[in-house]
Length: 116
Image (cartoon, rainbow, N blue to C red; front, side, top):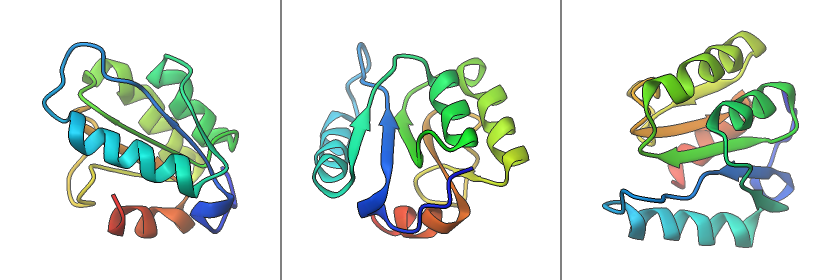
């Protein structure tokens, strides 16, 4: 798990919507924000790989909308086991539904939730 303490020093990961665009404005605002305030945003194309890369510290955080539970459940469990945090964008709900996913180290998670 990453020990990065600031968003400005972090490397983010996400996936791009390709068929469900009901959250496109919110997604684009988040993408723009993180493109401008982090060391970069990466898109590998696999939520499972992105989540495992957060767990092992290659990425500092991951965010995405509209995935299926089977895309994320294993990766979210691995992040928890590695000592990270996962939630929806409000911080109260579970990311296991795949509807909203925020995954990061425990240091960044609270700040990210305030600024999603």
